[in-house]
Image (cartoon, rainbow over all chains, first blue to last red; front, side, top):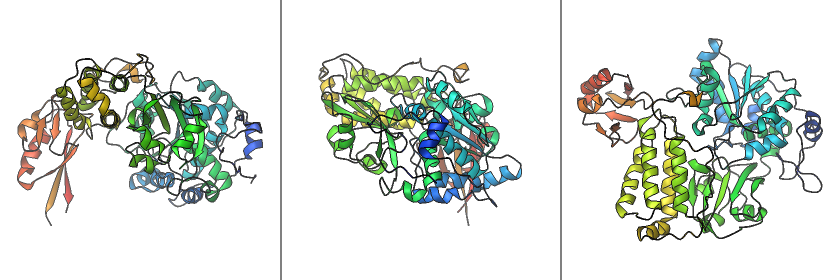
Length: 443
Length: 74
C-alpha cells in the first residue's frame, strides 16, 4: 500500500506550486496513487469485503442523492430480485455515470480530464466486489472528454473491460434507469416500475454510481475507510467536488472537505465579482437559497437542506444581481420543459405551463392571478412522474418564488430591478417542447 | 384481518383516456391537462372497502393497462 495523500486534494491532487497534477497516463497515476490492490469478489450472496471498508468510510453518492454507497452495494447483491437474477445466470452490471446532465456542473469532466484512472479503478473495484462481468462508463454524446477517456482506457488491461457508452445529451438520460435503458435497449428515457438495482441493463442487477463516487471508491480500495473518513462531515465524510459558477472571480471546480463553510468556498473562488441576488444549489433540479442564509451555512447535504437548498451533484451558482432573477428562472424552466422525455402527462404538459406562467411573471404585465395560477400548478407536477424530473423543476421554481419574492412584488408593480439584459445561467441546446412520444431524440 | 387495497397508476403508460375518472370519481379527478389525478396527489391511493369493485372495473376499463389494484395485508 502506498502512502495515502494527506491534504484535502484527494481526487484532484496538486503539485508543489499548487497546479493540478496531470494524471492522465496510467504510469503517472500509479506513481502518484500506487497500484490498485487485488479486490476480492462476492461470496455466498454477499458483496466482497471492500463493502465493509466503504461502510466504514461513510461514503455517500456524489451524483446528487447522497445515498449511502455501501447500502446500494448491498442491495445490488442481496435483494430478493437480485438473487433471482443471479440464480437465472444474469450477472450484475456496473455503470459509472459521468453524463453530467446538469448544465451548470463540470466536476465529472474536470475529474476525468485530470484523473481518469481513479474513476476506472473505482469501477474495477466495484465490479469485483459485486461480481459484475460488464462495466460501462457513460458520457453524454458530443462531450469533449470522450477523447481523453478513450485514450486513457487504451492504456489499461482490466479484468472487466470498461466500455465507453455515449447516450444522448439529454437531461433525463443521465437518470440511472435511463442509462440502463440506453445500454440495454438503445433508448435513453427513464423507466418506470423497475428498480435498476434489480432489473437494469437487460434485466440484470445494475449498479450505477456517479463518476466522483467511483473515484472515491478507487481511493478507499487503497487506503481504507478510516482514512477516507478522516476529513469531512460526520454525517457525510470525505472530500467533494464543487462546481462554483456565476458571479465569483474564479469560477471552476474545487475539491473541499464536505462541511466546509460556504463562505470559505466562495473565498477560495476569490470572492464575489459583483452583487449577488441569490444562490442556486444543486443545479436545475435543485433549489434557490437566499445569499446570506447560505453564506452562513456549511456545505453538507443536511445543512444546505436546512436552508431550503439541495447540494445535489455539488453545484453552487451565485446569481449576478444585475440580471433579472425571474427572467433567469423562466428561461431555465423552459429549458427543463424541453428536456422532458414526454412520457408522462403531468410533466409533458405541466412543465410548459409552469414555464408559461414564469415568463408572464418575469414580463412587464405580471398579475397576482399569474402568481396564484403558478402556485396551484406546482403541486400538480409533483410526485406524478415516472422519474423525478418534474419534481426537480417544481423545487427549482417554488424555491425561486420564495427567495425572489421581493422581485416578484416589483414585477407585479410593473418594475424590474435588473440593470442588464444579459443571460446568466447556461441553457445551451434549448429544445422545443416535446410532441408525441420520445423518438429519435433519445436514441 | 381485513384486506387493504391500493390503486397504482403508471404515469408513463397513462394516455389520458379518462375512463377511470368516470368510473371512480370518488378517487380520481381530471387535472387541467386532462390526466387523471388521484385524491392523494401521487401515483398511489388506498381504496376504501366499498369502492373495491368499482376500482376493479376502472382497472379493467383502462385501454392502456396503466392502472393496477394491489392487495395489501393489514
